Length: 114
Image (cartoon, rainbow, N blue to C red; front, side):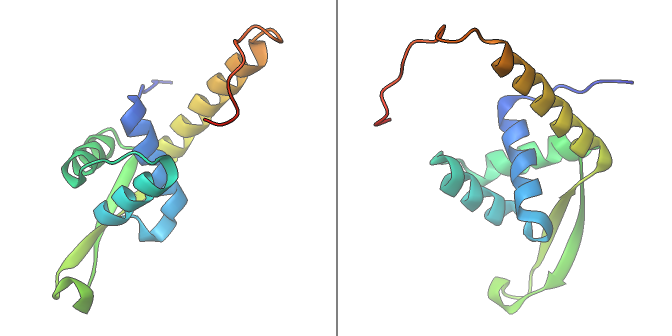
């Protein structure tokens, strides 16, 4: 089985598409990224990541219906493919294994007011 590796930003965008479900499009993804992470990202960076993920087969997209709120323009809506889902699960599994392998008290303490 071929493995795909994602950059950190691509992984976060893919996760955000999964979080938003049927309402995932460029602006909603950008807003959710900002709300969830406090990380300000540009719409063009999100679109570039969406394009790369679609090329890798981890996302699919289609044009939704025209809406009055967008002046009659249509939104490109995204959804996670089976390959994207499998990739996210693999990433989670690796991260969970690594966290569990960290010996107790081996990480420096962090302040709780971060």
